[in-house]
Image (cartoon, rainbow, N blue to C red; front, side, top):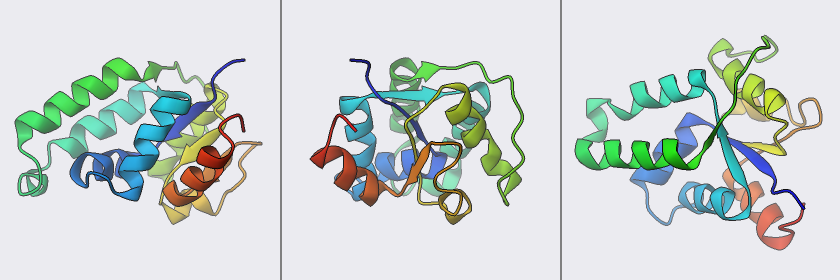
Length: 142
């Protein structure tokens, strides 16, 4: 049986880094434990930009953020995205839909209302971190 594929939005990844043992951190860990996490050039670029923001210095030292980023990039699967989706009301979030469709993901995990209102999107679940934990801890084969 193949492992399910997941897309994590940037906010969830940053929250997992900053707030250990939080719901986003638990969802982040469960995604890697129960499946495979996908990334694209566009999602990587956004993550690299956001993780460098000085406002995060008060939570996590820059060196630790870069180490986290390197581990994430080495652990997630890079998927080439060659389609354009324009259906999200926030154009910056279309990259997560494009990645999910291109990689045939089972779910996008996000707390972003602009994505959540599209659930399900072309057969792909769009779940909050809490919903993901509830669904995948109870039914890891989902």
